[in-house]
Amino acid sequence: MSSKKLENAVEALEHVMRLPETSLELRVSALEALAMLKLRMHLDDDAVGLAQAGFKLVETDASGTDDQQLQFRTTMTRDLVKVASGDLESADSHVRTDENFGIHTNMTPVAGLASAMLALAECTHVQGSLLQAKTFYEDAIKFANSEIDELLPALTAVSTTPEEVRIGALVGLGQLRADLSEFDEAERNLTEALKQAETLGGENHVRVGLVLSCMGHLYARRAKVENTGYLLAEGLYRRSLDLLEAPPIDNEDFQPAKDLLDILALSRARYADLLATNNRTNESERLRLWANSSWKGTRPLDDILSESTIPKPLSVVEVRLGRVL
Image (cartoon, rainbow, N blue to C red; front, side, top):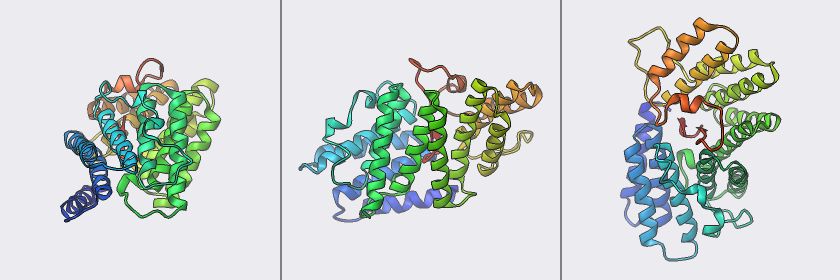
C-alpha cells in the first residue's frame, strides 16, 4: 500500500471516530484498524496509544455479555501491538487462553473475532508456545471462514477483515510448522495462503510477495535438512523481492520507505544465507551488508535469523502489517 493510500485510510478511520453517536463496536473497530495502520507505517508509539485507548474504552463502557467479545478483541490488539513494537515482556497473551473470555469456535460468529484470535496466535507463537499457538491459528482460520460464510456486517477494516485474517493465519501456521520441521504441512498452508492472496489482490500484489518470502524461507530451511531445493528457494526469494519492489543494493543514495523495510531486509538477509550455503560468497556479502544497514526492526537482525527455538523468542512475518514480530 502506498504512503498516500495509508494516509487516506488513516484519515477515513479518524473521521469515523469523530462521527456523533458512534456505537461502541464501531469505535473499537476503527481504533483496531488505526492501530494496525500505524504499525504498518512504523509509528509504533501511536499504535500503542490507539490500542490502549481501545482497551480502556471497552473497559469503561462495556456493560453486557456481548462486550466480553470486545474485551477479547481489544486485549489481543493491545498485546499484538506491544509485541510488534518490541515489548515482549509486558505482552501477556502467552499466558492467556480464549476460554478466559468465553470464546470458543462453536459460538455464533461475530465480526472481528478472527482478527483477535490471530493476534493471540501470533503473540503465543513469538513467545515459543508452539502447540498452543497452532490451535489458535487453526481457530483464527475457523472464525475467518465463519465471518466470510455468514456475510457478517463489515465492522472490520484494512488488516482486520476476515479475508486478510485468513491469509495471515495460514501464513502464520505455515511458519509455525516450519519451526516444528513439519515441512510438508507448512508447504500446504503457505501454498493455500498464496492461492488466496492471488485471488484477493492479483498475482503481482505486494501481499503475494510477502507470502513468497515466507515460502522461500521454508524451502531454504528444508534444503539445509534434505540437501535439495536450493534453486527453488532462490527463485522464490527473487520473485518475492521483485514484487516487494526491493531497491538496488548498489545505490547508496536510494532511501527506501519504511513501509515493508524490515521485511525487505530480512528477506535479503535470508537470501544471503542461502547463497553463502552454496559458496556464492560475494553475492551473499553484498546482500547481507544491505540488510544490516537497512534493518530497522525492534530486535537484532542476527536474533531473527537464528533458527534455534525454545526458549528464545521466535520470529513471525506478519503479512497483514508487513512487519516482523
